[in-house]
Every structure is written in C-alpha cells, then in structure tokens.
Image (cartoon, helix red, strand yellow):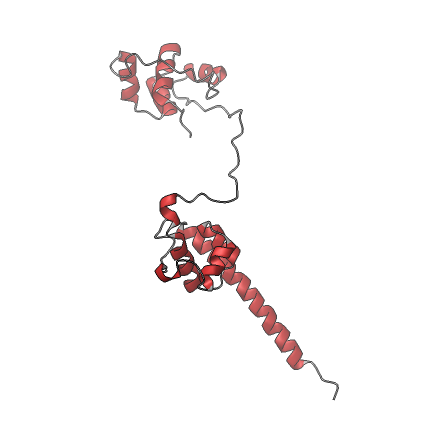
Length: 194
C-alpha cells in the first residue's frame, strides 16, 4: 500500500481529528504504533501542522467513518483523482560526467555483440547513429583514446535492458538465418530444366 506523501503530518491530523486507533493510523501512515502514540502524547512532532488527507485526496471521510467504529479494520487509500503521466519514451538524458564514457560503451557493445542494430545500441546508451558508425569505422575524433568498457559497469544502462536487447537481436538473427537456410535448401532441391 502506498503511504501518504507526508506521513507524520498526516498522522498528526488523524490523531487530532479522528477516533482511529494508533494501530490504524500507524498502518496507514507507515509509522510504528509507538510513534503515533508519542505524537498523541505530544512527545514527537511538537508544533507540527497536521495535513488533512481528505483535502489531499489520500483518504475519504467514509473510509475514516468505516474504520473508526471497528479497530480491526484498516484504512484504504482513496483512488487518485489525477492520472499520473505515463513514462515517456524518447531520448534519455546522460549526465555530463558520463558523456565521455559513451564512446567506450559503444565500442564494447560493437565488439561483444555485433548482432545489435544501431537502433538498439542507440537506445541502450543514448547516442546517435552517426556516432556509432564513426566508432565502428574508426573515424571518431577520439578513436585513439577509446577503450571498450561494459556499459553496465559504466552505469549507462541496466543489465536487464542489455540482456533484453541482446535476446531480441539474437532472435532476429536466428529468424533471418533460418529464412536464408530455408531459401538455400529450396533452391538446391528444386529441379532444373535440363
């Protein structure tokens, strides 16, 4: 369960404005029951302004009323009214401190996984196709200083992303190879008109 954005401030409000048990408030806010009891006793969060979870859309009054009557019930967070934006696909930002490592990562990918397409390398490392081609053709302006280094070790991509792209590339290479061998077999077994 997701906890409130400001758990202690929410706990302060719930202690002051509801008849919920310490366990119910602690469970909802992600705090320990003794911490909620200390808030109620004035030992913790002294002078802290309470945050109303109803106004924040984290709880409903009906949910508070339902749980106030039965201490065994647990509060359930309200459904968010605002839809979260979807993760955008597109160019990834590479910090300035990592940009000098990008050619090393590209060289490592080209050397160890030649089956990867330029688009896959570009997606993994966050680079452009002309840069990949320059490193592949050894026409990059810094070719003399490029050392092939693992992009996962350089923190340029995740290991699972690399494995996924390699699996896709190998599957694609396997289907292309299978099509070529099937085509070759059919041309060898087809009768000639002699």
